[in-house]
Length: 104
Image (cartoon, rainbow, N blue to C red):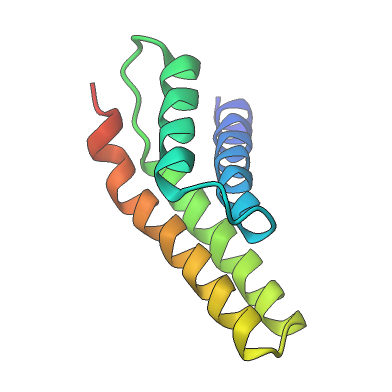
């Protein structure tokens, strides 16, 4: 059971993170638009089925932290680091509020 279920959770978390990380190269995509896309994706994936997002949220947080550290190491510019920090802060804020918007 866990072999397949966890793989799906990991894929969902990775996809949701990739939506948010688009803002690193496409700053015109607004944070509310990214949050709405994430919510719509989860609603479309789970449909009317009750879902526990705790695993997905955990995997998103770990994945974002990992990506953030890697990008931070590669960019020493204060401007680049400020932008990275802003995008990642928005992603973590979305993670914090996503459960409220998607609970059934």
